[in-house]
Image (tube, rainbow, N blue to C red; front, side, top):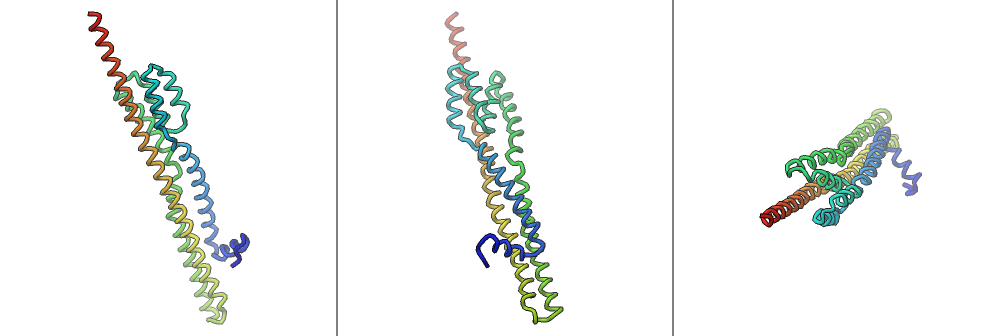
Length: 223
């Protein structure tokens, strides 16, 4: 087999008619992987520094600056922090509910189209198996019609069977690797959202307690 692109193309086309749906699966999988890689990559930003800056700004009473910083940072975690800051005057339960609502909206966006990859992982080997069956049927038909006098016809059917199987498995394996990687990245982002939400609630609770102590001290001094 020639290793140039034309040689590879001829080799793959020898896999029979099932190669066309397998090519379609490969193109769909590649498109989804690239699109999700881009979206999830932009969402997976490090927000530890963001939260520290928000903590500092809030402790200095610069709430608008803290909100502007969070809103100007990309990613669902920053959006979650911005939601908490916008609702800081509410009680802790209301702030938590507001952030949970935003998280419920952001989570499906992160998982969007990953189900397509899961489908490709399942269907590609099945299409390859179907190609194997049709290839073997072709080989046995040659044997039944002309006996063993046409070895090229027999080997052509066997080659069709093996190429389809190998292609289906290759597509499924590559897609599975990408699917697992992207799914783990989404889980990491969701975990970070939960962590940052808890940290922000603790920051707001601490600032509120500090403000209450200040009011009590001021009232005691006035008395």
